[in-house]
Image 1 (spheres, rainbow, N blue to C red):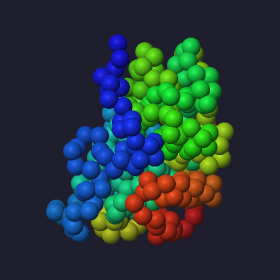
Image 2 (cartoon, rainbow, N blue to C red; image 1 turned 45 degrees about the vertical axis):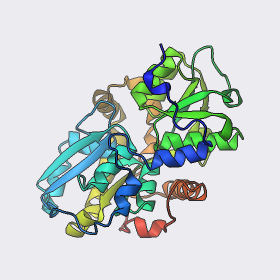
Image 3 (cartoon, rainbow, N blue to C red; image 1 turned 90 degrees about the horizontal axis):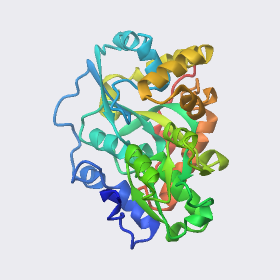
Length: 345
């Protein structure tokens, strides 16, 4: 039985890039689009920024209240909040979201102070006028997997005339669009929006020819026998990064947060690399993925000690250039104006 979400593909009669642009500007859980929200003049928050509570947004398919990665490890070890308390932050409230556009909506609405998510939605938000600053890259070189249904296509070229699902506005979506363009079939593939769990179910039913899957989901489906017909890491410019952004309002209240955040991250990364098995066990428990899937998804080299390493900056530049050139981001902006400069530890 065909999944209801696939009965109405997202704007199938429009060119793929036009579809992608509309997807980026449309939220999943609100009738108000991000572009509409930022175009409405509201230079000041309606409520005063609470300087003693940090509202942290994360991406989680399980609605977890703790992130993975270095910051999640620091929380797990009880080393996160005590360091933030030195800045006058007494409490951290974590809110989870299914994908980047949802987290962007919360930033626009003033419901978050800090967000950890993919670089693609973060760049789009900034280009659309959301007042954020980038303070760290948590992961660099994140892979995405293009998996086909069983007894389905066995190459990217065989996706012509087919439906491919992914989570709109995500780093996997940027990878998929870039791949289809490189392959010359961008206008011959219908891309439909499904969140990771929905996309996995659709692939298993055979409702879509393929899905562009994120870390975790990709290796999990591969272990179940679904063919991998491409990966982001095969293309130097298509892997993603995970970034941490802070609102300008909260940063104004806590100008030392970026430095402190990266001190916490650096210590946690060093601890992770010293105790990889303990970290992978923690990550597995938080995410719900088997340890072998976590290891395949998150190799140790993805966790940088630097706030923004050279490779991460290069990937950010490439992604921004792609989004701007294809008019998927409303405006261009210097990365140096977005990234908070700080001393390296």
